[in-house]
Length: 282
Image 1 (cartoon, rainbow, N blue to C red):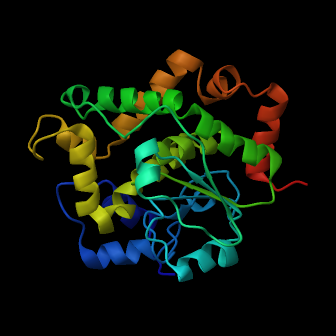
Image 2 (tube, one colour):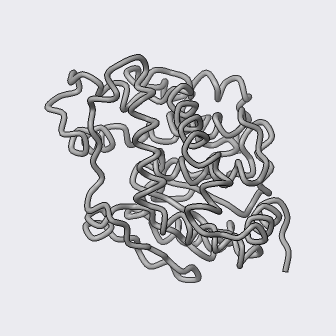
């Protein structure tokens, strides 16, 4: 594990996506906490090790990009070194059918069907400013379309506090980022730490930037990277996350309101989820 300062991570994570990250700095960052080396994965990290005050206990909640390239050595790291016992696939119907997660001995792979057939997004709302309106709309749609998947993750936290878990989508950036933000917020994580985790996907996705560029072009229907709004869609900015948090506050009263009013968890469930994110209990 290399030593990279929080300031170095911040500098890389806040780099415009149009500029490839310097390889030497990138490789050092990917070998440093909170990132984890799991062969065959990318954008993999421990939510309990995010710089700042994430509050989630280390070694319990993990996030990553797609697992279809997971190697046998990677599987051993997931279930052996990390102790992961359940893997949640947050992808659409077509993504899951086209490249299903591999079987991982020692861990249950869970995919909860959503109403989204394929991952698509409109560029119109990403044109103005830094794309804040587009991010708010896209992530609010995640709360609606993937509510059953999110509920399944939270049920695991409520019912299995001693069993580490991982969740992922394709890039491990947007849908995964929404779930990570919810978990960190429920654990009492500071807003700066939650935003930092969101921005770290700028670093974590860099090794597969060409693949994800193609994924974004397909999902947005853009004819080229020059299409209006496309740069904002691909370029992470804290303003995008902030716009989403504001929208969630307006519609649900925040993430706690979403968990209770939309997902149907009781106040007792919510208290248990919060407690289990912070400390393991039997």
